[in-house]
Image 1 (cartoon, rainbow, N blue to C red):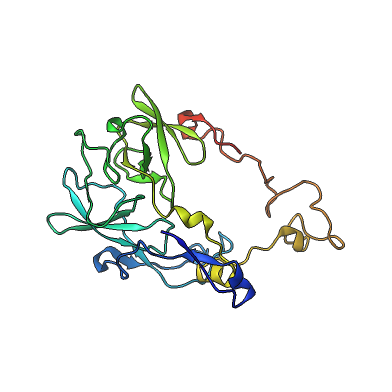
Image 2 (cartoon, rainbow, N blue to C red):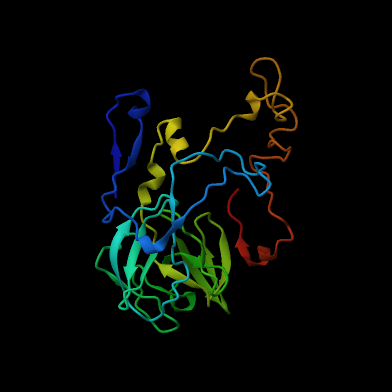
Length: 278
């Protein structure tokens, strides 16, 4: 995949860039693997906005991605690489010998025609796209789609270009270095997929204009400093005044820009070997 730039026909076009979709081999999604995606506008069941800056956006269909990889010990063939509007990574469409089709997140360098497998507990080739228990993956290997609970399906390392690394194995746990730099204990029975996720250039995309964010369903974010005192603790004052005291805080008065909000009694604290850098 590469990035394409645009002729500077307008000021916003001058620095805009986007994916060239050169790796995409199929333009329309598999009908059996999509469902309607209803937008919430950031509102809960009572109609109140609980998440700001959400609304509008292009209509999208939800692709059903197989995060469990529960068709075991049966090789599947990659028949297409597709675009997914709901995530940064690309999708790979797999077809099993019994004609069942499944979507998975496409790893880097996975090509149409490749065969990959999800193994139970057998020794399997350490090959990009193969899924297996962490127990069977050598230390130092790059992985993605990592389970946190055995059998629940992949929950972490799922965005474009992401990868984790197995640092060591001790007793029944593996030391996994996550993209954030955090080192975490994960059970050897949990499953992961070998390789790094594709669409690595996603982080280099320049949106270019506000309207493109609106197409994505993201509304403008206004600085607290630009608001009135009734709307934000940073609001008010004459001209360009500072944030004042306390400095700086969120709309609801919680210290921000480095303040740690993780619950000190959270059940998973005991699994964190090394915290990520703030």
